[in-house]
Amino acid sequence: MKKQFVAAGFILFSFMLPLKASAAQFSGLYVFGDSLSDTGNVYNSSLALTGVGSPPPPYYPGRFTNGLNWIDELAQKLQLSTSPTPYTNVLPGTIPQNGINYAFGGATTTLANTISPLLPGFQQQIGAFTAPFLQNKNADANALYIVWAGANDYLPTNADPNYFTPFTEPTQTINNLKTAVASLAYVGAKNILLVNLPDLGQLPRANNLDPSFPVAPGTSQALTTLTEDHNSDLSDAIADLNKVLNPDVKLISLDVNSLFTDVIGDAKTMQGVKYGFKEVDKPCLFDPSCVFDAGKQNEYLFWDGFHPTTAAHKILGDYAYQQIEKSTQSVPEPSTALGTLAIGAWGAAVLKRKRKKLLVTTASLVPDGQSTRIKVEN
Image (cartoon, rainbow, N blue to C red; front, side, top):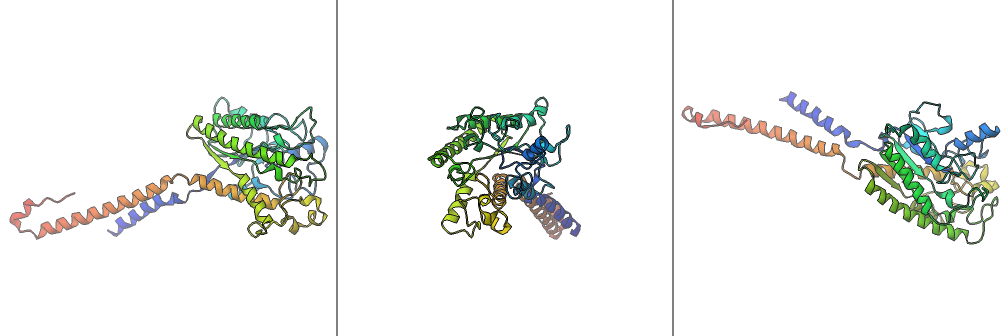
């Protein structure tokens, strides 16, 4: 009897093991976007073209901030051994173990790049990934695909206006994002994270707090309105995509706008303990007392006129991980049902054995003349 209980215990334990399944099961990350997600592509490209990596110090090498960015942070949270390999570091014919980062700083959702015409836009990034899989449609179904682009479609830019002029409404941007998601799903992507935009009207450059690029009056409010329209249309686009994509394709929404609003409001109302920021308007890069003081850098939300500090990127990486985990737990884990079933089956078996034993014992107490009238259940 003891052996039976031990065996049942092992069976029950084996059913219960998967109960702690989490988002950390992604095989890698494939990233498409702009400078907020770039982990070295613009740096490597400029180094190859000019011999100088851009952006230069005091930017962190390969990042548009003062340290690691949210992709680095998310890769760590997902327990990947490294961040996804920048596309510019991928050897021909190879697929890095932890995925590939295709994001280039300056990328718009079109073919244009606002940093240089020699650099790719978002559409080239999607094309570079999907091209090898168009026939077999065997892109890694266990990876997480990150799509975050659109800010450069709207922001004031140093680019030649004959090359690219910022959009004043979101229709084309949203259509480009929808096409990109459909293309990823077509070649086999199953888990796609879609990120909306923070309030672009609150960026230092939009509020003329970036001395490197003055903007026209009214820019801030115009960008805030554009952000609202973009995010509303993106939500509608995700709903539309969910209706037409295969049911096994999971679209995960990441509401960066709400997080950004929360961070700014938290600091401006002097309730900064939650995030620790003391300056949410001016960029650290243009404050001599901040730019070379690592401790003070962590008190600033913005590193330059566009980009958050690495402290803000860490918050974003944590937030993204939490939302991804929530999305994986939105439907009860199959293992939970199996665990419950295992408990029920084991309990039923124990009760059945007890009942059989009771009937057999009862039969043995009946006089011999009546024993044939007793039927023992099996």
